[in-house]
Amino acid sequence: MIVTPGELRDRPQSRRSPSGAWPPSTPRSTPPPCSGRSRSIARRRGKKKAIVAVGRSILVIVWHLLSDDTTRFHDLGPGYYDSGVNPERKKRNHIRELEALAYRVTLQPAA
Image (cartoon, rainbow, N blue to C red):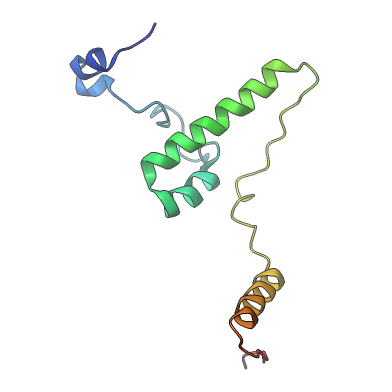
């Protein structure tokens, strides 16, 4: 069934939820799928765009699972997108950026 914008507008408020909304009947002890990705996108672009981006990611995952019989889904875990901070890489990138601006950089560990 295809819902036109006019039909959606004429529905009661209780039946107008965004397509990316987490169902209220599910327990809140488990995080929603792709919640880490949603948080990282929401920080940069806003909550509504994060919902659409995560919905698209889920759609791409489902398409790949349905199009190929040998493909299996492997969940990366709730902290996968949050654990991407590598202190050495971050330090190296900042040093490189400062050297590109003609600064000489020497680092000393904080006491």
